[in-house]
Structure formats: C-alpha cells, structure tokens
Image 1 (spheres, rainbow, N blue to C red):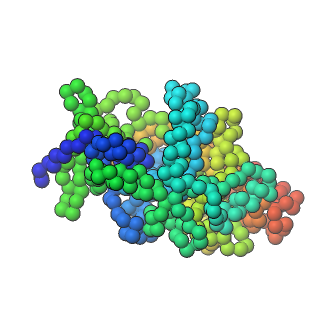
Image 2 (image 1 turned 180 degrees about the vertical axis):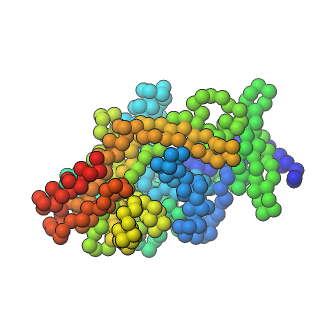
Image 3 (image 1 turned 135 degrees about the vertical axis):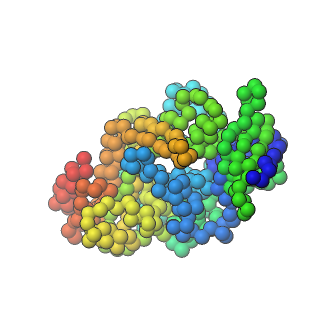
Length: 437
C-alpha cells in the first residue's frame, strides 16, 4: 500500500455542495486555510458532455437509479463536484415565511424568522444573480401559465439563478446533466469561485471521507479519507482545528456513524419532498426539453392546511431515458405511443412539502440505503396537486392526459373547445380523475 499522505490546514470541509461550498467561502474569506474534500471529480464546463447516459452515471447517486428499500420512490441525489447545485433546474425561490416561522417556533431557531435570515437570503439572492426580469417561458411553461390563467389559478414566473437561455438551442434543457454552457451560477460560479479567489482553498477532488478524527478530548481534529488518482487509491489524513461535515442528506449521516457518533437522530428525519409526474399531449409540438425548464410555478395548492403544507406545480426537466421510466406500462402499443409523443408532451410535476420522515443507513457493503413511507396527509396533498395539474393541462388545450399510475389508462379527449371548457369534456375529465383517487 502507498504511504499515507498527511496534510495540515486550519479547517477541513467535507462536501462541495451548497453547505460545504458556502462554509469554504466564509472560512477562506475570514483568513483560514481550508481543505475541501469532495468525492466527485472537478471538470471544466468545456469538458461537460451532457449526454444522458454518461451524465447520470457520473453525476448522480447510483447512476440515477437510487431507490428506497421498498422500491416505491426513486431518489435523484447528486454525487458530484458542486453537489445538488450542479444538477438543479435553475429555479431559485426564497424560503417561505411559514417555513421560517416553523423553524423558529418548533426548533428554537429564533433568528430564522427575523432580519438576520432575511439579510442572509438577500445576500444569496444577489450572489446567485436571482432574477425574474427577462425570463422567457418555453412552450411547456407557457402551457402551465395558460392553463392556470384560464382556470383562475395562481401562477408566476419563477426566479432563475445566473444566466438562463434565451432561445431553445442554448442548451438550457441540459441543466440536469451538467449544462455545458456553465453560466448557471450554482456553487461553481459563486461560493467555490469566491473561495478560490482567496488563494486559501485546497481542493481534494476524487476524495471520499472515511472517518472524522477526534483528539483526546473528543473534539474533531481532522478527516481520514481515500483519494483516487490515476494510479489507484491512497489514504489521506487532513488535520485541522475544525471539521465541517456537509456531505448532504445521504452521505453525512453515514460519515458521522462511521466516526463513532451515537446520537439517535443521526440518519433519521429524512424529508424527500415526494413528487409525481403527469403530462398532456398536444396537437402541436411542445418540445418541453428545449429552453430553461422550471420558469413557472403555480402555488394554487401550496398551502392545503393553513400551515404551509401542500405542493407546488412546475414543469420538470426530463430526457428520453428518464421519460421512458416515468411512463407506466399499459402494453406495447400504449408505451410506444407515449415515447413517440415526446415532442408533443407537456409534463407537469407536483412536489410535496412532506410531513412524513425517512431513515438513512449503509449496509455491510457500504451502500446507501433509504427507507421512507409517505404519510396519508402527504398522499392526499399530492393527489390534490395531480388533479389540479390535470385540469391545467386540459384548460391549456391538451388532447390527452397521462398519469404515472399503472392502473389508470390515459384520458383521451375529442377535438373540442381549445380551452377545454366544453361541458362534456369537463364531465369526462372528472370521471377520469375519480379513477386516480
């Protein structure tokens, strides 16, 4: 085995996502030397190939096929340099007031509901260049906006971070695959860039943290990690006066457990904001995969209990392979029709602010495992959001509506009023929605 490499710095940060990157920026700007450990590999924007097969394997946990133990929920979790900020869909909304109030009321974070939090949010807004001015809606987002307007549902342009595409060939639809244009801020263009500018950041990519080291008093004093390079792997020990673990909801609990921490809450209380897709087929091409994907949000079912729990309705970012996995099996002819409808489809996704919780652990092979069961109230909130989504699609002019339910076949409508207001159409739609309940 090659000898262990030892490094010395002021602070060790594990993870380069939004948590770790911001900590690295704050610490280096305060004058500390920071070693940033990241399992993923750094690559320049010019090296991003953005093919669906390659990017999902390289950027996502379990190559994008990460499932809960009961196989009921697929989890899209980042496993790359920059964390989830490298793969998100450019939409950038501030935390809702009800969420901030809950943090203060239920968890003792008094500052979360006060001016300190507001100032922090404003700082992030400016650093990420969040904006709504000049945001252009692609055809799918126009469907969402048009359907909401015809029904009297709330809908608004969703703030975007950094640069966003002005025309379909600007590759905005590739943001979930790394987006080779590289103009989207994320951590690459904000916190990590700020940390690099100080000259006090040491980046160790391809480096998997194995254990947080502690001194005789029990205080964290470093990290033991395995680093991959062109010749194989080697052990690296990075020592510092402080350690920040920011490996995300999937990896942080595992590292803390491997490091001997016994707090019973470690790995528990996982929230996933479960989501479900529904899509409409239109006579004219929609090509939802072109342009920025998530530029419109409907809050019509965002607060279903007076406490801020419910769902938001958006346009998702999907590509052919994922599109195929999201469509249920109703026989070969129906499946072929769904795939052939890709360019004419307008998908909507409902994301629930969940009250249920899950658990994260690792098995004997060091594979991440997640157990999670939706609470009945979350299922009802999601169901309500799906029904509203279907009505939005029909109001916008969809001729077919497809759900993700294996037991419910697609709704096919005759050529009627463009806005779906025909009484017979409404009766047919409501009968179809009854099958979803």
